[in-house]
Amino acid sequence: MHDAEILNRFLDAELNVHPDTLTALMAQEDPLEIGVIASARTLQDCPPVITPEFLDSIQPASPPEVAPAEKPVEVKRPSRKTPAAEYDENLKIRTDRDITRRSYSVGDIEGFFRYFNDRYQRLARVLRERDQMRDVMDIESVKGRAQEEVTVIGMVQDVRPTRKGHVLISLEDPTGTVPALILNSDRTLMRLSPEVVKDEVIGVVGKMSRKGDLLIINDLLFPDLPVARKQKRSPDPVALALISDVHAGSTMFMEEAFEKFIRWMEGRLGSPRQQELAGKVKYLVIGGDLVDGVGIYPEQENELVIKDIFQQYEKIAEYISRIPEHVEVIIMPGNHDATRQAEPQPAILEEFAPAFYDDPRIHMVGNPCFATIHGVDLISYHGRSLDDIISTIPDQSYSDPEKAMLFALKKRHLAPIYGGKVPMSPEERDYLLIDQPPDILHFGHVHTVGVASYRGTTVVNSGTFQKQTSYQRKNNVKPDPARIPIIDLHEHKTTLMRFL
Image 1 (cartoon, rainbow, N blue to C red):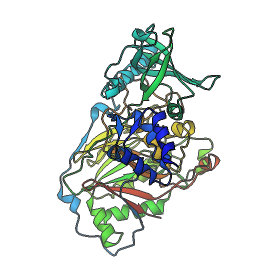
Image 2 (image 1 turned 45 degrees about the horizontal axis):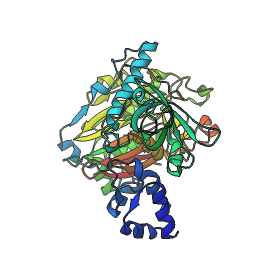
Image 3 (image 1 turned 60 degrees about the vertical axis):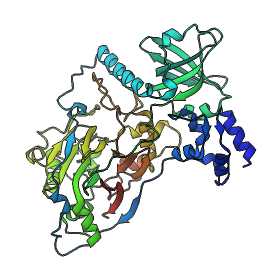
Image 4 (image 1 turned 60 degrees about the horizontal axis):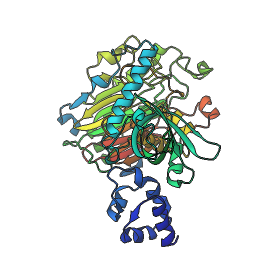
């Protein structure tokens, strides 16, 4: 691509480019792959001139340092050295962000009003931190301001293409609604428009039409994470193991692989280096679907080796009881577990899994879970919203779950698409909203492993311990089983352990 063409692309996006930046772009195999033209205007603190330094700061998300998947080998006896046991527990679970024993929803109209108003107000506060949003006006007050420049924050009531190829977005705030238009001549915003979904909160900068009844969009901003943010690290050399979707009780449960994982945690499996890593594990998060459940999908009973859900929990509890005593275990539910289906989900009910409640090392939490571990902020969510994101947003797939997780981060919401496959309970507070950027974001549900890094957040999907089911075959979902991400909280290095 010629330098003149690249320069014209920046001018089309109303951006000025430093000569050194142009030289840096010319050195790329495909300059447009960097995505700077499509994204620069939507970034916080975007400078008037795109410099090489700013270009470096908005490179696409790339995986953090991830060691190759390692298959442990058997050892004759456990290692006696367990460094993690030398450190006291430093775990703070945000009980104010946990729906367990806090659900007061009755599902009435007033409940939905309070729920969406909470979502709007909190995401609007996030957007107002952006430089472009300093002069925000109420939607009702911009009506009639013919050909004036205006800035609004609104919830997307509807989004659809017009007959002439534009994109029409209906925006709403507590004062009223206004139609907003992305012109088909604005290539930057047209490329961004498929990512606009109903019921999300966005910022819009534009100009009112001649009649003052239509907002022509010049800039569109998602809440997103800050561009420059330092990732917090543990002062102690401890590690976090992330698993999910064990599905005990299923004929497809990979019991031998899970047994290997437990033996590795015990120090009975692995090379000296692998045992050293196991010895650093101070925390284990199980992100839902511990058991396969009963009646979750059609003809599931044909794929159950344990058809009683109480016995399924007894089975998995036997394994968890073998986790070394110094390891703190956080257990949250998924859509196969014994709690309500509507999200946010309360913790797994004690009557189904009493052994978990009797173990002082085990912390029973709802879905999602917000926690701080040795100073590192973690959000763990089972991840059912990935079904909606992958089926709705272009270029998303089950084989790369981390990309869909980045979409959720940009929206600052764990389930940004309302009214899809995820049943939502209209609580007084939106428990799935991401107020503060996490240092680690953990999902499960889709049975595939993915790792990425985005603006100071390590993004991890933890895979499964279940082989492909008949339901997954029908939906062309290919699992990536028995690969476990281990995150060193001091160095923020992720290691994938393979237990096949």
